[in-house]
Image (cartoon, rainbow, N blue to C red; front, top):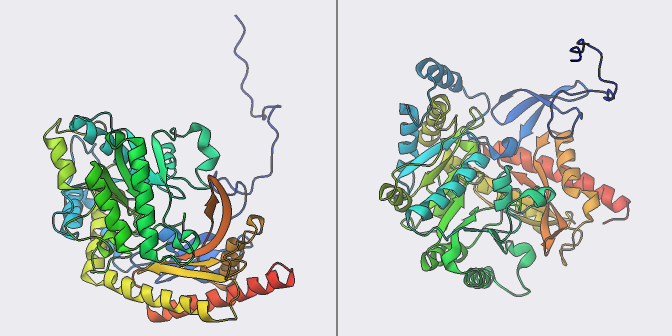
Length: 487
């Protein structure tokens, strides 16, 4: 028997040491990133890779996470109280009051009888994974196990797990195509993006009707008896850039699902929980549907904890809950940190403060003011590459094209969206640069846009500052593109 080799602190000769500027396996590997130091209101203090420390206006709140201001004066008390009060236990066996109270709060602040129960998770991806499993078990409980197909749209994003990447279709999912669920189970429908896909002289209503007819053709082709659900974001975020749908379109989805016995799942992880609600409450779909005809399932997240805790969730309608009660009366499986008491307690306090202070009403009004001010660029001849400004409430997009008449895209390699977002950053404004919202078949052609999702506490002065810095940044990038002979 050979002797055990002696241990050594020397690196393996087969491993070549490489320079290391960061110990995080995140984003650009070994690329130094700005670091957050603190925040107050709509301003954050960051330390640049150069070491410079400066204040910038946060127009995107990370990935549309912020609801309460940064540095909220009550949040330390909320966190301290939750840490003192709650001890962890596996929630499927021993649960907690905070999870129950948060569920009741969300249900009570939704349309009457829209939802009957909730499950809290740690991320939006996890919530959408739970929705996939819940949909599957629902049909087993109903005695229709053959309903195994999930409908969703092209150019959509529902999370970064393999299951949710399969449900979506974007430039974040295509690198993993070979390991995703087969398209025979994850059936794709045309996306809703009138700026690029509406026919000449076609109205938004006519476009909506045409899309719905295409959806019905696909449902019939796939066989409705095999289709489990339809998943859509009522207002899509980083995949498409906040196209505001017509009531005809969203209501048409509800009616198609009713007609063919398909569950309707709204993914409101990014667009919901107060960001776009017209009634001072929580759900985005209330802009588009009768209040008594909501979704069968809904996933939520981001602003639920306002960046102070990591929490998301899934809500189910009475219809879904009753199917479980009439069947096995249990959920097959659970997650370690679902319904985590600390997260639920802090999130509940956050949401109670938002509602009681009217912040949801504020973001709807001030967000629409922000959008209207940005939209003025569409009629200003100085802005030669602003093709579209769209959104609703606290969720907005500015899209850039090479030719505003033909909507010709910029070459993908230019990455104009990040040229603009990078210039905004340099000038003191954080927005999100996004691309690839236009496709040809299953190949992305490009498309460049920046996004805004500010705090619910935004003021008119905050919005004016964001618009001012946006305009300055666009004009700077535009001048460079003109000088380079591109525009």
